Amino acid sequence: MSSPVWNKHARLSAGALALVLAACSSPAPRPIPPAVKPVPVTAAPPQAAAPGVTPGSAAAGASAPVAVAGPRPDVPPAARTDFDRAVKYMRAGNATEAELGFKQIALQYPQFAAPLVDLALLQRKQGQLDQAEVSLKSAVGHESGNALAWTELGVTQRMRGEFKDAAASYEQAIAAQPNYAPAYRNLGVLADLYLGDPNRALSAFEKYKTLTGEEKPVSGWIAELRQRLGIKAPEASAPAPDAPNAPAPAAPAPQASPGMEPANAATGGVKPKSGG
Image (cartoon, rainbow, N blue to C red; front, side):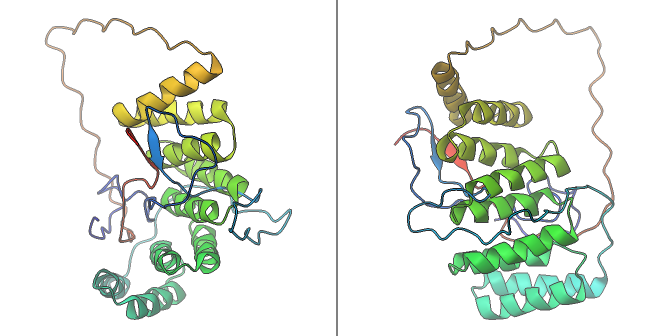
């Protein structure tokens, strides 16, 4: 787990002020491709609930906030101090003090999603999925351009059996940050295993692979999906010769955009893996 970071561009894994996806354990409704096996994901809108899972209470026709990325608000020193203290409580296993701290910060500084995301993680760990979903909806309501918060909302909705809502949340994460890889990976697993949409899954996994360059886990899944859909793999093109004395690509300029990063960041909740 990475330590909390206050600059959203300082670390790609933390993404725009929210938590990266947490791996969840729940049985998949259909067999997993032999070459690749995911750690069960969470995400999706209201659809058929998995056995033993209570569907979410999303109101029919209720409009979700539109994901719009924008400038991040500066973090006051007092907010940083309070947030760091709550994170320390959380990491020390003091869930009660951590929860109180995150709630207080969310009340005092509602413009930040990070305290609500960490609060939702605590609630989810305690099995309070309905409260976690409420916290995450509040987070994206305050920061609609936060891809990480949208992804965690999708994870929670999947855990509640709200598969279509989860997919919508992943799409919102992608709209907020088109190059946010974890959203594509989670969407791919959700589409294939829970929504029965292999075309959508293939598109998501291919985008994920393009963004990350990941080979072994996701490539096997892509190959299985292509075989199932009767799609031939594209032929590898020969690499173009390097131009002599070509200048090295310039590193992107750092962007100063302070913000609170949620703690407990994992690197993408849905983790396809080979083997059984």
